[in-house]
Amino acid sequence: MKTKTIFIIAFTALITIFLMINTDAVEFNFIFGKKEISKLLVVGVCTFFGFILGYWAAKPKTTVSSYDIDDPQGTPEDRRNELKRNNDLSDEDRDYIS
Image (cartoon, rainbow, N blue to C red; front, top):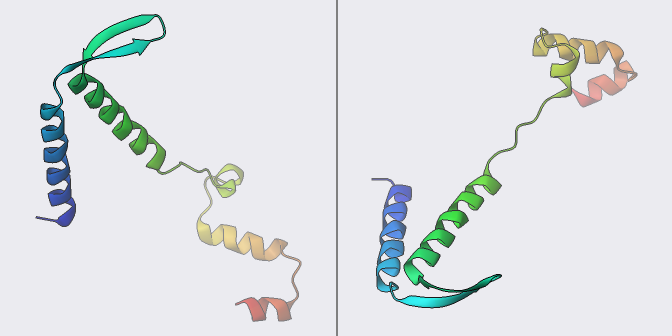
């Protein structure tokens, strides 16, 4: 098994054990009143939302390249050639860069 899989299994087991130990009811103050709720429910819901928010925050962002807007049918090589034609660099500068 991979290290990541072992870590996920161990972490899930620890969370489960922690939740099962904390099953007693405690009083929570809400905006509109007080209610007795199991610690299991509160910690479980908070853990679930933490994982969801962590996944959402770490998700890669989708970016749109400006090349896609100008010429969606062109190949990358066509775009490079067009950039070279529109470039105001001298031949000496182009040789230095490449």
